[in-house]
Length: 115
Image 1: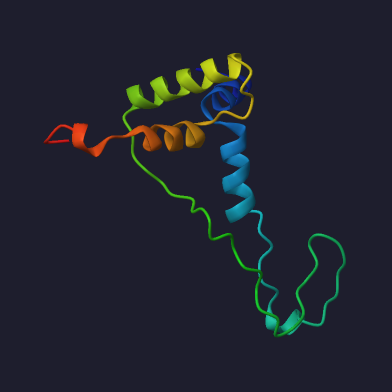
Image 2: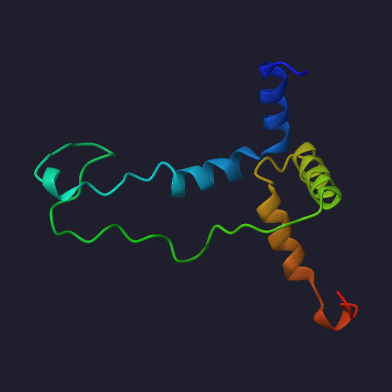
């Protein structure tokens, strides 16, 4: 059985830091709306409570976080490609960026039937 330290290394190798931070910051670390009974509590700084009756801050409209299913072999290939790009000095390369680039190259007339 693997130790907890070995599993942490495996997780770091599997998960792209930029993607994970993007998802966590948008979903898990977004401050929750203050309950109505505590609306008068005032704080300052990045986690400041919003004013009573104020509209919640708008979420970015130029992207959405989604979940898709992929075969493990395809994910392995994708991760190898991301690693190769990073080795070439493209330090911000990640799965999402590579998939977006691939989508820009697709010619729908060349897609085989029965995809």
